[in-house]
Length: 176
Image (cartoon, rainbow, N blue to C red; front, side, top):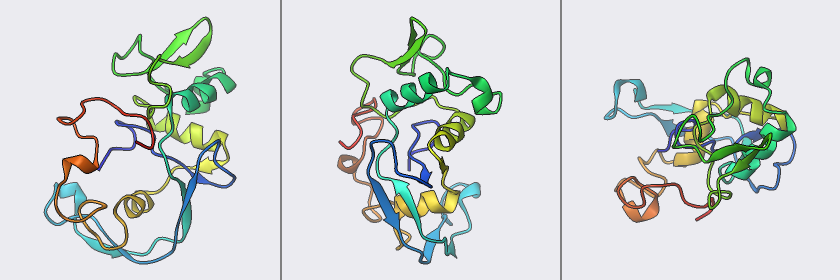
């Protein structure tokens, strides 16, 4: 599974409509969370019952995050006094640029998921749009489904069903 903050800002839980994005409703129901075979911090596998929630269907794009930074003037206080995101000048893996006093997406990466966002930046982004970050259980349920499969499609790893390091090696447009 992709890490919410290291790979990209996967989405927020709304209190209002998502800016330009589709939402998925995840009904209240039990599901199997965690793993007994993974790293120690993944276990034990247990049945949990989160309440129903809505979540953004797609990751936040570089363009959407740049718009947020510009709307808040990149105000670090909006991110709890912490850096909201690393621009490319500070981190070559970022696709956010700061040009002429504004944040913009790097050419060719405008519709790719934003990366190099701090937890504080992800939280501030969600709050700016009247939302919140999903809990660990909510995110895992949305990603895994209700059957507790290792992957959303089942138990067998299939590199054609995800963008893995050795298949593409970079982000791809949201929704692809």
